[in-house]
Length: 315
Image 1 (tube, helix red, strand yellow):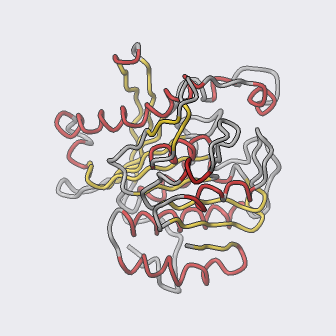
Image 2: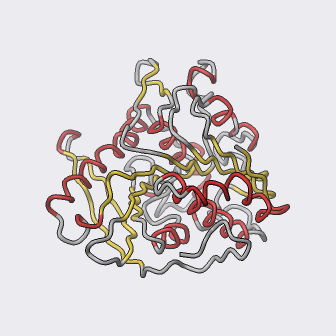
């Protein structure tokens, strides 16, 4: 693997071919709720293990988003498990004549649907644990001692919840749905939840107790609520865990993480921004899931030089 902290950093794919597996999990405890998945995994020898990263899509998305990112990370020896969250997925706007964002802006998501989305994540982890014992294809590859959580927009909020952020339930009572199996996480376009509760930010985000990388950009306004990118920074500002990395890409937009302009304005910087997202994501996982001290040093002192004027990375 190319050393990420070296000045001659490369964006080439890693040493492994990337394979795909698609299917569905069924949760009998939730009226047979279906959780579709799509898994990107490296073609590695039988005695090698792959750390696992969950990907949670944004509002109106599905398991097929962010392929550019997950193929890249998987090629370096990771397993990326993409979930589709029924009720907040692309079925809300597909096969409708109206613009997808017009449909999504007027769609009301109940608290029950939101909580089911969050519950999909620990349920999926339980299925992976079952695979270790029963699945001959992926079971031997799974390294469930090293698991990361990630997601875009609504998926970032899902990541925040798994990291310990408080969430109001159906009775507006603040609850903590922290998933202890996650060692670290990446929130692509973090989502503050002032629209859901008037609780102080310190109370909401203070319980976050794992390292997170928060990615946003100066053009990353919310397509639904309309708040600016600065509002997204509140999550990192109040998280209790000291390792909260914040990347702000110059002219970075909202949909780059999904691998598409998403029917929003095209961004001429998209290729460079995708490169930034790929490299910093992999560096973060190498640091937090694989314990690579050299990559950790690169994140702290070398990454900003590589970013140059295209973004700011702060701890």
